[in-house]
Length: 565
Image (cartoon, rainbow, N blue to C red; front, side):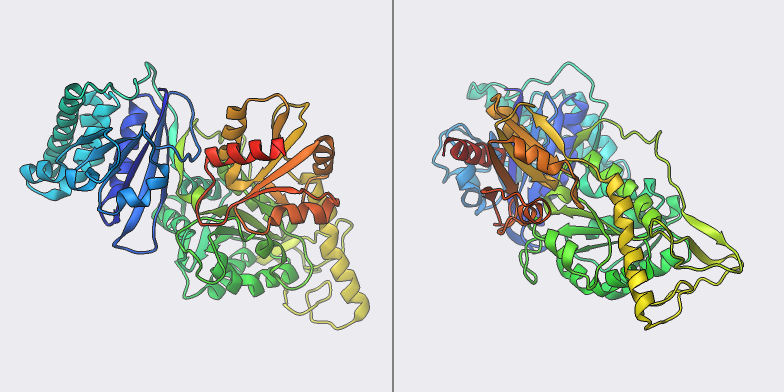
């Protein structure tokens, strides 16, 4: 095999994430490509959580149902993932956790006993890392060196014991493999992997830094909190003010204040938090303030499933704020897109003085895989504010609707803004003629914005009969499914900018004999947007809204079913 799927399943608090982080570093050093994602319950301890790690000799970046190796770490583990276990699944673990499995394809490893022999059951995770390294045929030197690097800031005794634990797991598993005549599952490639491993939070955070972000405020809410944490962690290095506000209303208003005085700010939140921010977003529309909003989607209404994934907030982002004013919404589907789109968001917000959204979800935020190094050579940030003169008018009527933006203290002009309707100088007015001119001025920006809309990208056959449409985090899953179907009549149209839509959208749709849309929501929000803006109705829909991401197998199955109908 050149692609295996490993799943660890246990309770919150057992340290599964430690195994994930450490083992992915090891396999990457061994030359493999790696992808990992997790699903977890909304609790600090207990429950049933699982992490999938895919290892491959080629790039891999999508969730699949298949489990090749399962390591259950609790009594409920087998039950939790039973739908994904097949006759080919190799189950490795302690007898008490694997004895009820209906397959004979299992290896009993006394993980807890081995950990106790070293001195503490906390070494169970490192033993699991060692046994996984063994069954994947990874050189023991790579295993030991990586563990030493990972625990470099810990006491020498702890580092020594973790190396010992890893070797115990490695040797014990190796003995069982030889005893049961089970071959190493995957052979390490004879190449060096110079890629970098990042997750969704890191790429959005790095994109913000590349875009000149120097202010972030937020009230914590999963899955968006990681971005505040990331930028807070690096705030001293990059001169960022990172503020945990008392609530979401304060957070959005802080960011508007930051832009008003010349900073480049962003706010990060999830659906429920964004609901509280919508009046502030509408304020941005009226005072024509730039603002970058990261909206990490999760299942709703209300608290919903706070640690699960969904693409349910597209309409929320488009229509939530009262009044009519332009917005831009990006929905990255790859880690690279997360970086480049976020950087671009700051420049577009600054240029057009509007809200620009980065729309992600829990699956995108928490998944990570290895990618080539990001290209920062051509990144160019432009500050669009001006030095004001004494006759400065903040809301001067211009041909393209974009007024010159001044900031207080930079020049001789008065920078006057107001949430009420205002005249060119920024002073309150109820004059109907001025009102009409100001509404038209704000909306006129759309003509300029449309010149910079990112077109959808087509993958697969150019002479397609079946066109599959997707946006955001479904990208890699749909693309792998299309590649596995490998027919010459099918293509995939990927949208990384979902609002406004590119004019070419209708041409792609009209060319197809059958169109299929894939969305992680119940009402097919993106297809409704397409119908609204193009008049084209997509009748075939693959929708999922149980809080889990699509799997490659599900997409293949549903496409084949619709293709034959």
